[in-house]
Length: 358
Image (cartoon, rainbow, N blue to C red):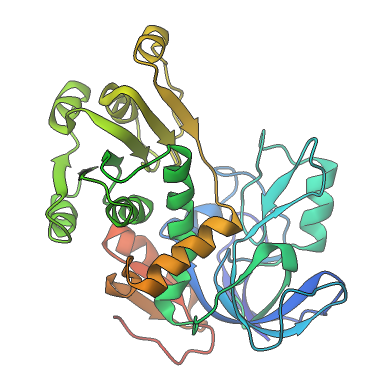
Protein backbone atom coordinates (compact mmCIF):
# COMPACT_ATOMS: atom_id res chain seq x y z
CA UNK A 1 0.00 0.00 0.00
CA UNK A 2 1.01 3.66 -0.24
CA UNK A 3 1.84 5.81 2.78
CA UNK A 4 3.74 8.89 3.93
CA UNK A 5 6.95 7.67 5.52
CA UNK A 6 9.33 9.46 7.86
CA UNK A 7 12.69 7.71 7.57
CA UNK A 8 14.36 9.64 10.39
CA UNK A 9 13.80 12.82 12.41
CA UNK A 10 14.63 15.82 10.28
CA UNK A 11 13.92 14.06 6.99
CA UNK A 12 11.12 15.08 4.65
CA UNK A 13 7.99 12.96 4.51
CA UNK A 14 8.05 10.83 1.38
CA UNK A 15 5.53 8.73 -0.49
CA UNK A 16 6.47 5.07 -0.08
CA UNK A 17 5.21 1.62 -0.93
CA UNK A 18 5.02 -0.25 2.39
CA UNK A 19 3.76 -3.68 3.40
CA UNK A 20 0.08 -4.09 4.25
CA UNK A 21 -0.42 -4.16 8.03
CA UNK A 22 -1.07 -7.62 9.48
CA UNK A 23 -4.18 -8.12 11.60
CA UNK A 24 -3.47 -9.27 15.16
CA UNK A 25 -5.30 -9.64 18.49
CA UNK A 26 -6.80 -6.40 19.87
CA UNK A 27 -6.31 -4.80 16.45
CA UNK A 28 -8.70 -3.40 13.86
CA UNK A 29 -7.69 -3.07 10.21
CA UNK A 30 -8.98 0.16 8.68
CA UNK A 31 -9.31 1.67 5.25
CA UNK A 32 -8.29 5.26 5.90
CA UNK A 33 -10.94 7.64 4.55
CA UNK A 34 -9.87 11.10 5.75
CA UNK A 35 -7.16 12.48 8.06
CA UNK A 36 -6.58 16.06 9.18
CA UNK A 37 -3.09 17.35 8.30
CA UNK A 38 -2.31 19.88 11.07
CA UNK A 39 -0.70 23.15 10.08
CA UNK A 40 2.45 22.32 12.05
CA UNK A 41 2.97 18.82 10.58
CA UNK A 42 6.27 19.75 8.96
CA UNK A 43 7.52 20.93 12.38
CA UNK A 44 6.90 17.60 14.08
CA UNK A 45 8.99 15.76 11.50
CA UNK A 46 12.03 17.73 12.61
CA UNK A 47 14.40 16.61 15.35
CA UNK A 48 14.09 18.17 18.77
CA UNK A 49 11.10 20.51 19.05
CA UNK A 50 8.46 18.05 20.20
CA UNK A 51 10.29 14.93 21.29
CA UNK A 52 11.50 11.92 19.35
CA UNK A 53 9.53 9.39 17.35
CA UNK A 54 10.49 5.82 16.53
CA UNK A 55 11.59 5.76 12.90
CA UNK A 56 11.09 4.64 10.21
CA UNK A 57 7.46 5.55 10.75
CA UNK A 58 4.24 5.95 8.79
CA UNK A 59 3.10 9.30 10.19
CA UNK A 60 -0.41 10.62 10.79
CA UNK A 61 -2.56 10.97 13.89
CA UNK A 62 -6.30 10.40 14.23
CA UNK A 63 -8.68 10.43 11.29
CA UNK A 64 -11.71 8.55 10.00
CA UNK A 65 -11.66 5.00 8.65
CA UNK A 66 -13.84 2.09 7.59
CA UNK A 67 -13.37 -1.28 9.31
CA UNK A 68 -12.00 -3.97 7.00
CA UNK A 69 -11.33 -6.69 9.59
CA UNK A 70 -11.19 -7.17 13.34
CA UNK A 71 -8.77 -9.21 15.42
CA UNK A 72 -9.37 -11.68 18.19
CA UNK A 73 -10.89 -10.26 21.37
CA UNK A 74 -12.39 -7.29 19.49
CA UNK A 75 -16.14 -7.23 19.97
CA UNK A 76 -17.27 -3.61 19.60
CA UNK A 77 -16.67 -3.18 15.88
CA UNK A 78 -17.86 -4.88 12.70
CA UNK A 79 -16.72 -4.89 9.10
CA UNK A 80 -18.06 -1.79 7.36
CA UNK A 81 -18.31 0.39 10.47
CA UNK A 82 -17.07 3.97 10.08
CA UNK A 83 -14.88 4.87 13.05
CA UNK A 84 -12.76 7.70 14.38
CA UNK A 85 -9.20 7.11 15.54
CA UNK A 86 -8.26 9.27 18.56
CA UNK A 87 -4.54 8.56 18.11
CA UNK A 88 -3.97 8.28 21.86
CA UNK A 89 -2.96 4.94 23.36
CA UNK A 90 -2.59 4.22 27.06
CA UNK A 91 -1.19 1.42 29.15
CA UNK A 92 -3.51 -0.75 31.21
CA UNK A 93 -2.02 0.40 34.52
CA UNK A 94 -4.61 2.42 36.44
CA UNK A 95 -2.14 3.25 39.24
CA UNK A 96 0.44 4.88 36.99
CA UNK A 97 -0.99 5.10 33.46
CA UNK A 98 1.30 5.90 30.54
CA UNK A 99 0.17 7.17 27.14
CA UNK A 100 1.48 8.31 23.77
CA UNK A 101 0.30 9.31 20.30
CA UNK A 102 0.58 6.75 17.53
CA UNK A 103 2.18 7.95 14.32
CA UNK A 104 3.11 11.26 15.93
CA UNK A 105 5.18 12.92 18.59
CA UNK A 106 3.68 13.28 22.04
CA UNK A 107 4.00 11.39 25.32
CA UNK A 108 1.64 12.02 28.21
CA UNK A 109 2.44 12.58 31.88
CA UNK A 110 6.01 13.79 32.33
CA UNK A 111 6.75 13.36 28.63
CA UNK A 112 9.37 10.69 29.27
CA UNK A 113 9.92 7.78 26.89
CA UNK A 114 9.87 4.95 29.41
CA UNK A 115 10.40 1.26 28.59
CA UNK A 116 6.61 0.82 28.63
CA UNK A 117 6.10 3.69 26.18
CA UNK A 118 8.87 2.35 23.94
CA UNK A 119 7.28 -1.12 23.89
CA UNK A 120 3.84 0.31 23.05
CA UNK A 121 5.30 2.52 20.33
CA UNK A 122 7.05 -0.44 18.79
CA UNK A 123 3.88 -2.56 18.68
CA UNK A 124 1.43 0.18 17.62
CA UNK A 125 3.79 2.59 15.89
CA UNK A 126 2.38 3.51 12.50
CA UNK A 127 -0.11 6.31 11.89
CA UNK A 128 -2.86 7.15 9.45
CA UNK A 129 -1.25 9.00 6.54
CA UNK A 130 -1.73 5.82 4.52
CA UNK A 131 -4.27 3.86 2.51
CA UNK A 132 -4.78 1.45 5.38
CA UNK A 133 -3.74 1.24 9.01
CA UNK A 134 -3.87 -1.18 11.92
CA UNK A 135 -5.25 0.39 15.08
CA UNK A 136 -5.69 -0.88 18.59
CA UNK A 137 -9.42 -1.19 19.28
CA UNK A 138 -9.15 0.94 22.42
CA UNK A 139 -8.20 3.95 20.27
CA UNK A 140 -11.32 3.79 18.08
CA UNK A 141 -14.87 5.13 18.36
CA UNK A 142 -17.74 3.92 16.20
CA UNK A 143 -19.58 6.84 14.59
CA UNK A 144 -23.19 5.95 13.74
CA UNK A 145 -24.23 7.78 10.58
CA UNK A 146 -20.75 8.92 9.58
CA UNK A 147 -19.70 8.57 5.95
CA UNK A 148 -16.01 9.44 6.07
CA UNK A 149 -16.54 12.85 4.44
CA UNK A 150 -13.48 15.15 4.64
CA UNK A 151 -14.97 17.50 7.25
CA UNK A 152 -15.49 14.53 9.59
CA UNK A 153 -11.70 14.29 9.87
CA UNK A 154 -11.83 17.46 11.99
CA UNK A 155 -13.62 15.61 14.80
CA UNK A 156 -10.42 14.68 16.61
CA UNK A 157 -9.16 18.26 16.51
CA UNK A 158 -12.47 19.59 17.81
CA UNK A 159 -12.51 16.93 20.53
CA UNK A 160 -9.21 18.24 21.89
CA UNK A 161 -10.75 21.70 22.29
CA UNK A 162 -13.97 20.20 23.69
CA UNK A 163 -12.01 18.25 26.31
CA UNK A 164 -10.30 21.46 27.41
CA UNK A 165 -13.60 23.32 27.72
CA UNK A 166 -15.03 20.41 29.71
CA UNK A 167 -12.13 20.60 32.14
CA UNK A 168 -12.85 24.31 32.59
CA UNK A 169 -16.46 23.40 33.47
CA UNK A 170 -17.94 25.52 30.69
CA UNK A 171 -21.68 26.12 31.09
CA UNK A 172 -24.36 27.74 28.94
CA UNK A 173 -24.40 31.46 29.62
CA UNK A 174 -20.71 31.68 30.45
CA UNK A 175 -18.50 34.29 28.84
CA UNK A 176 -15.46 32.74 27.18
CA UNK A 177 -12.20 34.13 25.81
CA UNK A 178 -10.17 32.09 23.30
CA UNK A 179 -6.50 33.02 23.05
CA UNK A 180 -5.13 32.10 19.65
CA UNK A 181 -8.64 32.07 18.16
CA UNK A 182 -7.25 32.51 14.64
CA UNK A 183 -5.37 29.20 14.80
CA UNK A 184 -6.94 25.84 14.01
CA UNK A 185 -7.35 24.76 17.64
CA UNK A 186 -8.61 28.20 18.67
CA UNK A 187 -11.11 28.19 15.82
CA UNK A 188 -12.42 24.86 17.08
CA UNK A 189 -12.66 26.23 20.63
CA UNK A 190 -14.64 29.29 19.53
CA UNK A 191 -17.15 27.20 17.56
CA UNK A 192 -17.55 24.76 20.45
CA UNK A 193 -18.10 27.54 22.98
CA UNK A 194 -20.86 28.92 20.77
CA UNK A 195 -22.41 25.46 20.41
CA UNK A 196 -22.33 25.05 24.20
CA UNK A 197 -24.39 28.21 24.68
CA UNK A 198 -21.75 30.76 25.68
CA UNK A 199 -23.27 34.21 25.99
CA UNK A 200 -20.10 35.92 24.72
CA UNK A 201 -17.05 34.51 22.96
CA UNK A 202 -14.03 36.81 22.82
CA UNK A 203 -11.78 35.79 19.92
CA UNK A 204 -8.23 36.97 20.64
CA UNK A 205 -5.56 36.80 17.95
CA UNK A 206 -3.17 38.66 15.66
CA UNK A 207 -4.80 38.04 12.27
CA UNK A 208 -7.46 40.74 11.97
CA UNK A 209 -9.02 39.26 8.83
CA UNK A 210 -9.54 35.89 10.52
CA UNK A 211 -10.92 37.58 13.62
CA UNK A 212 -13.51 39.34 11.48
CA UNK A 213 -14.42 36.02 9.86
CA UNK A 214 -15.19 34.62 13.32
CA UNK A 215 -17.27 37.69 14.14
CA UNK A 216 -19.34 36.88 11.05
CA UNK A 217 -20.12 33.42 12.37
CA UNK A 218 -22.28 34.62 15.26
CA UNK A 219 -23.18 37.99 16.85
CA UNK A 220 -21.97 36.65 20.21
CA UNK A 221 -18.36 36.73 18.95
CA UNK A 222 -16.24 39.76 19.85
CA UNK A 223 -12.87 40.27 18.14
CA UNK A 224 -9.91 41.44 20.22
CA UNK A 225 -6.56 41.98 18.47
CA UNK A 226 -3.65 40.71 20.56
CA UNK A 227 -1.56 43.63 21.82
CA UNK A 228 0.34 44.17 25.08
CA UNK A 229 -0.70 42.40 28.29
CA UNK A 230 -2.62 45.26 29.89
CA UNK A 231 -4.31 46.29 26.66
CA UNK A 232 -5.38 42.75 25.82
CA UNK A 233 -6.79 42.15 29.31
CA UNK A 234 -8.74 45.41 29.20
CA UNK A 235 -10.19 44.61 25.77
CA UNK A 236 -11.28 41.12 26.86
CA UNK A 237 -13.03 42.31 30.01
CA UNK A 238 -13.93 39.75 32.67
CA UNK A 239 -14.86 36.25 31.52
CA UNK A 240 -15.74 32.96 33.19
CA UNK A 241 -13.44 30.77 31.09
CA UNK A 242 -10.23 31.40 29.16
CA UNK A 243 -9.11 28.80 26.63
CA UNK A 244 -5.41 29.22 25.82
CA UNK A 245 -4.96 27.70 22.36
CA UNK A 246 -1.90 29.76 21.45
CA UNK A 247 0.88 28.15 19.48
CA UNK A 248 4.59 28.82 20.04
CA UNK A 249 4.99 32.48 21.03
CA UNK A 250 8.08 34.48 22.07
CA UNK A 251 6.61 35.47 25.43
CA UNK A 252 4.21 34.26 28.10
CA UNK A 253 2.58 37.70 28.25
CA UNK A 254 -0.45 36.80 26.05
CA UNK A 255 -1.25 33.84 28.31
CA UNK A 256 -0.91 35.96 31.43
CA UNK A 257 -3.17 38.59 29.84
CA UNK A 258 -5.82 35.90 29.61
CA UNK A 259 -5.28 34.87 33.21
CA UNK A 260 -5.74 38.48 34.32
CA UNK A 261 -9.16 38.50 32.61
CA UNK A 262 -10.63 35.52 34.49
CA UNK A 263 -13.32 36.70 36.89
CA UNK A 264 -13.46 35.39 40.48
CA UNK A 265 -14.36 31.69 40.59
CA UNK A 266 -13.49 31.22 36.92
CA UNK A 267 -11.04 28.96 35.13
CA UNK A 268 -8.24 29.08 32.59
CA UNK A 269 -7.30 25.95 30.66
CA UNK A 270 -3.99 25.49 28.84
CA UNK A 271 -4.23 23.35 25.71
CA UNK A 272 -2.05 25.11 23.13
CA UNK A 273 1.59 25.00 22.12
CA UNK A 274 3.12 27.72 24.30
CA UNK A 275 6.69 26.79 25.24
CA UNK A 276 7.27 29.54 27.81
CA UNK A 277 7.31 29.16 31.60
CA UNK A 278 4.61 31.05 33.48
CA UNK A 279 5.20 33.19 36.55
CA UNK A 280 1.97 32.46 38.41
CA UNK A 281 0.67 35.18 40.75
CA UNK A 282 -0.03 33.15 43.89
CA UNK A 283 -2.18 35.80 45.57
CA UNK A 284 -4.29 36.33 42.45
CA UNK A 285 -5.20 32.66 42.18
CA UNK A 286 -5.87 32.39 45.91
CA UNK A 287 -7.98 35.50 46.49
CA UNK A 288 -10.01 35.14 43.28
CA UNK A 289 -10.39 31.36 43.74
CA UNK A 290 -9.24 30.72 40.19
CA UNK A 291 -8.56 27.35 38.59
CA UNK A 292 -5.56 26.96 36.26
CA UNK A 293 -5.92 23.68 34.38
CA UNK A 294 -3.94 21.71 31.86
CA UNK A 295 -5.57 19.62 29.12
CA UNK A 296 -4.03 17.23 26.59
CA UNK A 297 -5.80 15.33 23.82
CA UNK A 298 -9.27 13.91 24.54
CA UNK A 299 -11.26 10.96 25.78
CA UNK A 300 -13.16 8.83 23.29
CA UNK A 301 -16.41 9.85 24.97
CA UNK A 302 -15.66 13.50 24.23
CA UNK A 303 -15.11 12.83 20.54
CA UNK A 304 -18.36 10.89 20.36
CA UNK A 305 -20.23 13.81 21.92
CA UNK A 306 -18.71 16.21 19.38
CA UNK A 307 -19.82 13.86 16.61
CA UNK A 308 -23.36 13.82 17.98
CA UNK A 309 -23.35 17.63 18.06
CA UNK A 310 -22.23 17.67 14.44
CA UNK A 311 -24.72 15.01 13.37
CA UNK A 312 -27.54 16.96 15.02
CA UNK A 313 -26.53 20.22 13.35
CA UNK A 314 -25.61 21.96 16.61
CA UNK A 315 -22.02 22.12 15.36
CA UNK A 316 -21.62 22.76 11.63
CA UNK A 317 -18.29 21.21 10.64
CA UNK A 318 -19.27 21.24 6.98
CA UNK A 319 -19.27 25.05 6.98
CA UNK A 320 -15.55 25.20 7.74
CA UNK A 321 -13.12 25.74 4.85
CA UNK A 322 -11.48 22.40 4.03
CA UNK A 323 -8.95 21.66 1.28
CA UNK A 324 -8.39 18.01 0.42
CA UNK A 325 -5.19 16.41 -0.85
CA UNK A 326 -4.19 12.95 -2.01
CA UNK A 327 -1.11 10.89 -1.21
CA UNK A 328 0.88 11.79 -4.32
CA UNK A 329 2.66 14.91 -3.06
CA UNK A 330 3.39 14.94 0.69
CA UNK A 331 5.72 17.95 0.45
CA UNK A 332 3.06 20.00 -1.32
CA UNK A 333 0.40 18.87 1.16
CA UNK A 334 2.48 19.90 4.17
CA UNK A 335 3.26 23.23 2.53
CA UNK A 336 -0.44 23.82 1.88
CA UNK A 337 -1.26 22.95 5.51
CA UNK A 338 1.37 25.37 6.81
CA UNK A 339 0.15 28.18 4.54
CA UNK A 340 -3.49 27.56 5.49
CA UNK A 341 -2.74 28.00 9.18
CA UNK A 342 -5.94 29.10 10.88
CA UNK A 343 -7.57 30.16 7.60
CA UNK A 344 -8.71 26.62 6.87
CA UNK A 345 -8.03 22.93 7.30
CA UNK A 346 -6.19 20.48 5.07
CA UNK A 347 -7.47 16.89 4.96
CA UNK A 348 -5.74 13.91 3.39
CA UNK A 349 -8.06 11.64 1.39
CA UNK A 350 -5.79 8.67 0.60
CA UNK A 351 -7.81 7.30 -2.33
CA UNK A 352 -7.42 10.67 -4.07
CA UNK A 353 -11.08 11.01 -5.10
CA UNK A 354 -11.67 14.28 -3.26
CA UNK A 355 -8.69 16.45 -4.22
CA UNK A 356 -10.47 19.77 -4.18
CA UNK A 357 -11.19 22.75 -1.95
CA UNK A 358 -14.54 23.13 -0.24
